[in-house]
Length: 145
Image: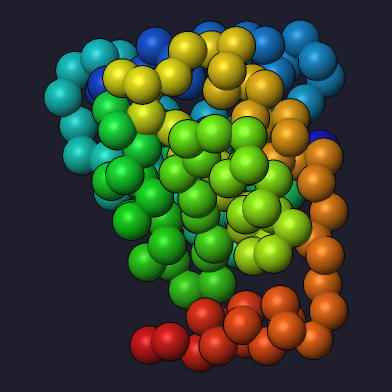
């Protein structure tokens, strides 16, 4: 499974910890940066992660900033991307089950590595429920300009 990941400076530490753990579990990881805690702009990294998922280069994406809000907004601007700022287990699960989200976002100021990994595992192990009502809603999301 290929996971793309990116963060701004505030998410850099969590990103690095997640990469180490994911690689140790045999995930292929595409790291879009940033490469230090020097100030950068989160939209650049969220856009790269979302683009890689939408294009099919990655199966899932992880985007991280201080709150998780900025990267979520930025990732969702990419046509066809569905990103969620998962702040609990239910959100990680339901975003996949009902929305077929492929990008999970974290706020490094509010989550530790173990909790982020727990939510990520729930996220990737939950199947999209499908069905007419969920497909209809996703199609409507995809048609918003």
